[in-house]
Amino acid sequence: MPIETVNITTTALPSTYYLVAFDANGNERLEPTGFISQKLVDILSSEPITDVFLISHGWLGDIPAAKEQYTKWITAMGRNAADIQKIKELRQSQNQEFRPLLIGLHWPSKPWGNEDLNAKPRTTSFDTSGSELNNLIDEYAQDVADTETARDALRTIFAASIEYAYPPETLPPQVNQAYEVLIKEAALNGDEEDNASLNLNPASIYQSLRADEPETQEISFGIGDFFQAKTNPFLDVLGYLSYWKMKERARDIGSTSGFKLLTQLQKAAAKTVRFHLVGHSFGCIMVSSIVAGKDNSQLVRPVDSLVLIQGALSLWSYCPDIPRRKNLPGCFSSIINKRKVTGPIVTTRSIHDSSVTKLYPAASVLGRLQGQDINFAETKSEFPEYGSIGTFGIQGINESISLKMYPCDKPYNFQAGKVYNLESSEFIRNRKNNKDDDAHNSIDKPEVAHAVWAAAFGS
Image (cartoon, rainbow, N blue to C red; front, top):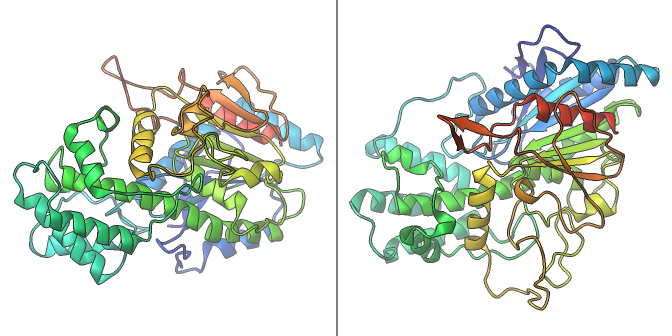
């Protein structure tokens, strides 16, 4: 159902949120009762909403995963009674009664994901033979390139993963050719974050995986699960392709369909309504693209706050001039230089998030074009060439403020127009059996919700 219920009974936060679902092409999914976007327009046109929270999940999110994540996020926000009381008092001082509208955005970001709005998560696995293999090829083709040429290439790749009991030392020519065809069909030409060129070289990626090099150790895309194999270099190469494709999809849908949705909502809303955008992982690309727009497009008015939680996008993506490049701005630099966010921009980073500390730079290094237009004379920097906002925060801008993430009983004082990078390792952490596990999705914490509320206060 497009209107989802959250178990919140003790605060003024609504117990429901609206789920706006886009398909892989960015088209809004039509519900039996019509488009949810129109329902939201009607609400903003007729009801005294004060704050709109627009939230986006990240990579590997199908419908069940998105619903689960949004339920956890919104529940965490709803439990911060002190923050809700503060924003109620703040809006009351502005002669308004706090009334929020919560919107979760869904965009297909998981290969073979469950995109049925009413379905439960799929529990069966594929046996890689017969009709199930054909279904698998069809489903993955829809995510990468919906053509017969792409399906033929996928069949070659999957067949090789079954044929070889032990991966050969080099990528077989027919598999390498299949990957080159698939990359061409997917039309992956440029980086979503800093406009650098891509060089998705299947043979190089495969060799790196085979060598078990440090940058590819402990990285799993989960694709081999369908073939009941923990490691499968043939399919791990496919995982890297999925990684880049989903990044591209986040930016494409955000800058077009997401931008259109927010524009509709802003036009319908009173000028006093504040819009707060929150993204996680690749969802940070999604919300950044919504704000930045496409081809110098402009929203009706700037948004009021922007929170990037463990962002899987370049630390240089917001800066006007990327270090070690020649006159190359980050693709979201207009957000800063054109003041597209009037309130605070807040990021989180954690050393316990291995997805952004390990997977992100590894995939970036393997995907960039070696020998591109880099200014090697500029080598002194405390930050790496390839790194994520979820590891280093937003860098390369004139001014950013570094803070530790606060506990819930300590107030922030975020100022409008400022960028705050929160070192959050104390709270964004996932302990299992007295050891740290990947904390990329461990964000439904009251301290994280506290920072989101504080960003809304500073708008």
